[in-house]
Structure formats: C-alpha cells, structure tokens
Length: 67
Image (cartoon, rainbow, N blue to C red; front, side, top):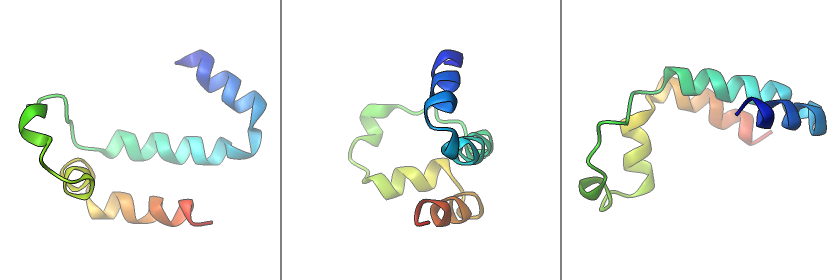
C-alpha cells in the first residue's frame, strides 16, 4: 500500500490533493466488513454506497470528480 502511494505520488503529483481527500472520505465511511455479501448482491450500487457513505461525506467528494 505504501509503495502504491509513493509511486502514485511520484508519477502523478497533480493528483496528490485528490488522494488526500479520498483518504479522508474513506476514514469517514461506515464500516462494511460485517456485511453478509450474499445478501447484499441484489442491491444496486447506489443503495450499497448509501449504506457505507452518508450524504454529507459523499456530496462534496462527488463535486471533486466533476472538476
């Protein structure tokens, strides 16, 4: 993981801010290790995403992607 961070920063330094913001969004995410994924498979992506991320976390992050 640290190698990927270092390599990504060296090769694409202009994305460093995006890496940091994505890391912070991930830290605010709800835990999802306890899900029974066989039961979750029928959910669409947006339903599953709303179970992990709250709106206050993901909305500002989505605005970053559109820039």
